[in-house]
Image (cartoon, rainbow, N blue to C red; front, side, top):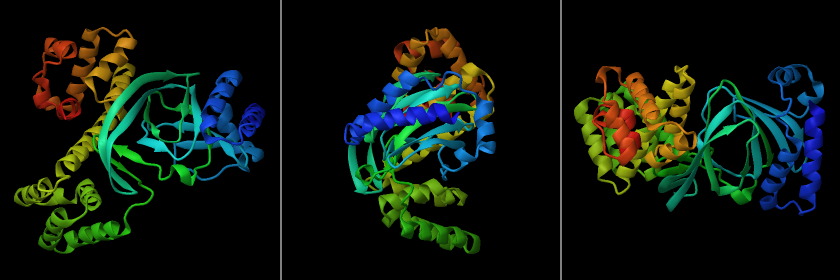
Length: 370
């Protein structure tokens, strides 16, 4: 196994060195050599996993990574490295990159969605407001190659369908020029999760402890934070859901305080969307039907009616079948809500006319209506 990737790495190194190690040239160089080498040909899950256990040469170039469910570095030098990433959990965060490179599918397939983050309004270097939009959604299969441009010009997420899916990435090391690498939370927030505000972290931890000791004191502290805290602080408190442990009147007061802030509605929409996204991911974890898993992948990464139609139109799926799958997901997500009219869903796909199902399905309501 090492020989294939050693050759690939040497070829990329030779080509990139001739550009003076230009970061902007690296993605195109990697993609071209992937196409020539075709590393997916003859790729074996079992052989790769056995090499992780048994190959001392491979062991010598590994390092710690939290990306993917298993990272296997197969080539490494001073300028870049090549890694195989195994994916069992299925979904990545929406993120940009502090590096340049390219990736291809070695095994399985994934729903791949790209985004733009427009009208950017920075709060500080690690927390930004903006407006997210889907720019493309596609189904990637073995042999498909995509370039990774550094910075915010390439924002994407992948939803891996089989368990596991496997991708190959050739990438530079992270550089200060493109940092921080941001995670994006639709529809309005981008943040640097590697550099959270220490003061906000400590304050949130103190509120969690206060809630155990003196709930009224904790509620007063949260209300004050919602009224006076920074946008970043309010976001993390909302995301913690600590305020959800209070009774209804206290929760109403806290939400009223958030809505009085100029950024309040954007934060609440972002938190609500994140909760729905988590729910869709949870549904995916217990869904065995391949078609429904693909649709769940599109819903979690590409919550846009036009993009949904484009994705399944490219797959030549009839609207009636797409409507049937949407109803099946509705039944999984909201079993107590009762049935829904297939013709209503088809009409929505055709004309955008809102069906009654959206009144009873929080997933569809929040994803498609906002």
